[in-house]
Length: 372
Ligand SMILES: NC(=O)c1ccc[n+]([C@@H]2O[C@H](COP(=O)([O-])OP(=O)(O)OC[C@H]3O[C@@H](n4cnc5c(N)ncnc54)[C@H](OP(=O)(O)O)[C@@H]3O)[C@@H](O)[C@H]2O)c1
Image (cartoon, rainbow, N blue to C red; front, side):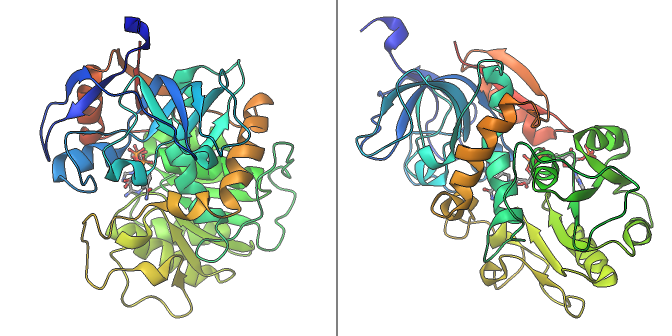
């Protein structure tokens, strides 16, 4: 086997070990229901650094972390349809794989076909790698039928009415944290589903979220943010709120806005099982995914760690997003790979620095490692 065909990985040798150690790794086997890709770029998510620091999720060490990858298909599981060796793809290696220590910080990685999209030649691996985990998470919150906001699925050819033409009943979604990776996907997906979007972001990112399609933008740090959003959207049909970031006060603010606006009084979110703010909900408001709210405040454990991918890969949402909408929307450029990738380095050695930078905080950025 030539050196180019050998696998190498950024290993975490034991729980909470830092830094990762780059070494040889076994070649992944797609088995019946996975695909294997030669990874060309892997994007870093807050979950990666959280798993490393807290020693959660992974059950077996040494392990390989990483959720997002873009590359070329090298092997297809015996039961998999719709993919061929040589396809250019981006996909989500979900927590089922992470439990067993098989993530994307390696040259060859398995991906879940239901959460993998074919990507056009015009899109770089670095750009494509920013989408899968964030899009899966956004899609769960806004499209999942029973526990999410159940918006109609997005379409690549969707045309949205321009500002000022009047707002159709139930057609405005609030995305809290629009400059996050998940929020950036949520804004674009909601627009492509035919919804108008209001978003909060930091002051320096208001134009960024406007560029993604949010018509109303508000600085989430402004003192009267709840009143500001309510004032802007009063009289519009409210389709609910999607909380893209995980802070206790953001759940409360979304709930208060939903309460005051009426319409669909539901707050969907990124992390069903870790929703910390559950008591004293304003009358009539409910959280999406509420069956999973933990009995007590903020708690992170492998048992409770929520993985939206379990839900959407087995429901109609996964194919609607990854098979139908994403490839077409990337091809006609109605979907942008946002936030822009910030390439931390070329080589698996950079996975650790990239994780450390995510832990220090990203702002409308996605840290990416190119895998040579
Ligand atoms: N359940 C899952 O499977 C799953 C998957 C992916 C992500 N997640 C979770 O989803 C969350 C978001 O992930 P991500 O990758 O999108 O994060 P990210 O891009 O790293 O989030 C950073 C962004 O959060 C914004 N932000 C910080 N505090 C905020 C606040 N109080 N209100 C509104 N926005 C705020 C910042 O905005 P400014 O810079 O504009 O100030 C920044 O742009 C994380 O908690 C992550 O663990 C869960």
